[in-house]
Length: 383
Image (cartoon, rainbow, N blue to C red; front, side, top):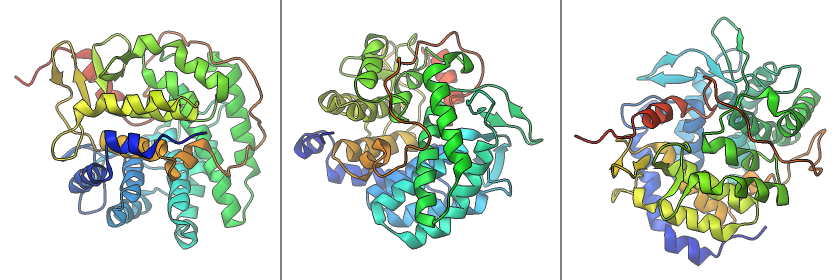
């Protein structure tokens, strides 16, 4: 794996610009440590953690620590978090499996950035409880159900994006367990079964083929590597990539989004196509605001920003993509350096087939509802 030329990355978005972007995220952080999507918006654990990771990379350790403390306080006795919070109160009470699992990825990232064993030891019980909750949501076929309601009933639908991310979180959890001196064979079995399901049983997952995340997330999550990953990313390039603007969030709307573009850049880098990855980050810079934040997306038929918001998680995705392409600890986090393979190995197998027509569940990263609304209202303007 080669890192991008540091000069090339800094020519796209330099250190001062990244610090300004981190400051824009921190400016939205609420007094209790929560990082909402935007000022006055709701907070979910996945995007909150992505912001905490970005703040740490950019040197805003104070804000990152406050975000971790919020997460710690908000964890429920069963190990989960509510799907969203607003103004310090629960907004949506069900639990999203991928949102809960992502704490392990964020904590592993923190370990790679800081080497702070004391911090890991303090947050290990949080990650352990969260992954125990998630593994309890695994179906017999290996897929992990996307959500559980307040009564403890699982929604019997599984998502490629969410499960790919959860697979990586399980591996991060196994790495954390090794640091803590514990063994979690149930997590190893869960990771092996989930990997097998994602690679060999697409029928177990809801079809979300209009969403770009289902296209590239199997690469970020480690389901596909090497030539298979490159083939996956080539397979729908023309469906999603819009020259000089970024990538579409959904393939049937004239709407590019910054976070998805940066996530694709991470996937491209992991698949050894770093030049294309740098170009992706360059292409989405039209979404940058002079204050350092980033607009969520651009509706290029109507030529308007949509939604009319500068989302914290879009800014976080820029920082994490830049660190990945520069060969920083975010690259090592998503590449899986030092993580156990568990009961599965990166054997050669067919790439994931294209899934079927979508149903109704979320994407598993916390952004689905707003993205769906934006896609359904592509002509909305500021006036």
